[in-house]
Amino acid sequence: MIKHYILSLNPTAKHDWDRCILRDPLTAKRPDIAKLIAEAVGADTGSYLVSVNIEVEVLEQAAVSHAEQLSLNIGEVSVPSQLREVA
Image (cartoon, rainbow, N blue to C red):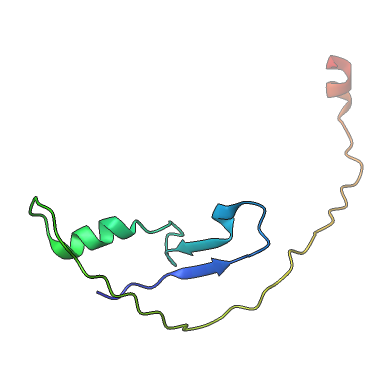
């Protein structure tokens, strides 16, 4: 079974859980590795000794981009006179 994931590494992240994130490329959900192994084993009840081989191949690396700040210039909004009278 071959699965593809997006790995995001940020060693300077504020929280430990944000430093290394593994996500599904389509749903962006974090994979449940135990559930994936259970699906591969089958549905029979029991305890299993399993060997899991994780082979990692980097398919593509996205460049690190700094978040751009967008400045929005919101002009003065004219309030209709009817609303001014109610207020």
